[in-house]
Length: 463
Image (cartoon, rainbow, N blue to C red; front, side):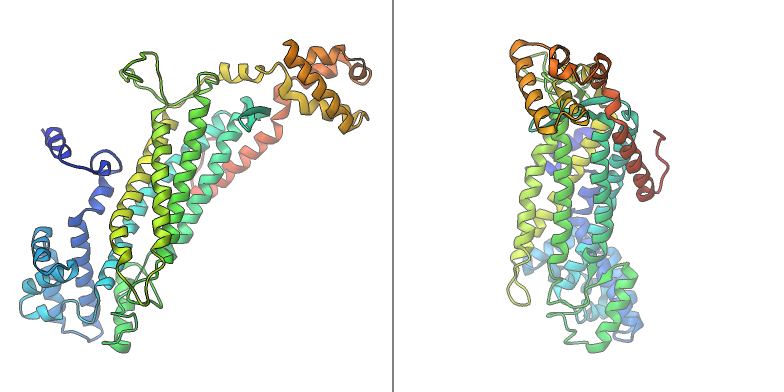
C-alpha cells in the first residue's frame, strides 16, 4: 500500500531528485518542513542563550521554546502567502504561539542569521550521510586493491596499450584519491559549517557586546563554529569551498565510472558492473549488457560540475548583501547533495557486484603480441651496453614490423642478430614474463592500504 501511495505521489512530481535520485534521509533534511522546523529550533536556541546572558526574560525563552516545538510547516506556509517573506512568516507564527512573550521572538536578529545558521545545521547532517557512503565506497576500493594485488593487466595511456600494469594498483590509485577527499572533507567542515547571530550588517548594532556574548553561547549550543566577521550574511567563500569539494568528489566518481565503462567495452571485456537476472539492456537488442549505472554516474557529474559554477557566482554579492544567491542556493544545495549521494550509492553497488574476467584480463596482455614489453626490451639492451637511443630505434622498427607481419615481438628478437649477440634465448624469454614487473606496484598497493587503515581507523583485509 505504501508503495502504491508513493507511486501516486511520484506521478505528480517534476524533478527526478524528488522520486528517483538520492537518499530518503537527505530528501527529508532538505524538505520545506524540516527547514521550517530547523529555523524554529534556532529561534528557540537564540532565545535560550539571550535569556542566559540577561537580554530577554527567562520566561520568554521558555515560551519561545514551547512555541517552536508546536510550529508546523502548514501554518508558516499559509502565513508566507500573506506576508511574502519566509522568516517573517515564521516569526509571526512563533510570536502568536508564544503569547505575551511573543515580542521577544527574533530579538536583535536578521533573517540571514537564521537562514545561514540553519543551512549549516542542515548541511552538517547531510554531510554525515555523504561521509558515511564515501567511507563505504573507499573501504570497498581497498578490498578490491587487495583482492587483485597479484593480477597483472594492461596499462593504457591515450587509450592504447602501454606497459604491464597491476589491477590492484588501478584500484589503489582510486583508493588514494578518495582518501584525500575524506581528509579534505574533514578539513573544510570547520570553515564551512559556521553560524552567525550578529544582526543586520553583522556588527550587533542593536545588542552590542551582549550580542556577542549570546551569539557565542548559542553557536556553542548548536555545535557550530562562529563566523567571526560577517556582513548581513556569512561570506559565501565558505559554502563555495565545500560545494567545490563535493564537485571534485563527483568528478572522481565520474573518473571511476568512465574506467568501468571503458573496461566493459566489448573489445576489452575485463570488468562488468552488476546486471540483474531480469534486467534488460535494450528494447531492440536482447544481448545488450550496458554499463548504465556507470553512465548514470557520469551524467550526474555534468550537472554537479555546472552547479559548482553557480556556487562561484554566489560569492559575488553587492555591498553587505543582496538576494541573488538565495534562489540559487534553494535549488543548488539539495541538488548537489542528493545527486552526489546517488553517485555514491551506485558506485557502492558497482563495487559490491563487480565482475572481473581474470582470463580476459590476462588474454589482453598478449593482444599486441608482445609489444607491451617493448620498453623492457629497450632497457635490457641498454643495460648490456647497446645504447638506449639505439635500442629504442631498433625496437621501434621491430615493433612496427611485428604489426605489419602479424608476428610476435619475441619471435623477431630471437631472429635479430644484433639482439641475439647480446641476449641469450633465456634472457629474451624472461622479458615476456608479466609477473616480474609488478613487484613495486604490489609494494605501493600495500602502502596505500596502510594509509587507508590510519585514515579510516579500521583494519582492512590483509593483502
